[in-house]
Image (cartoon, rainbow, N blue to C red; front, side, top):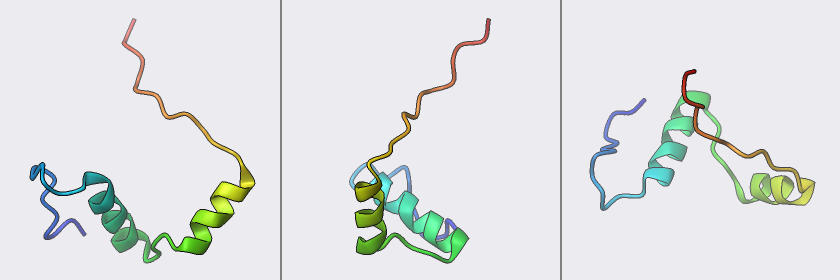
Length: 54
């Protein structure tokens, strides 16, 4: 699923390659309609790094 995706190449868009990997894994890509539905829902979740181990 990651064949042909070189995440070490800093000249390529990692976000776009990530979306390609998700599309290959799920069989569903992100469409303009999906984006419009997400934006119109007006809901977001902050993604934070893992907290340090105490």
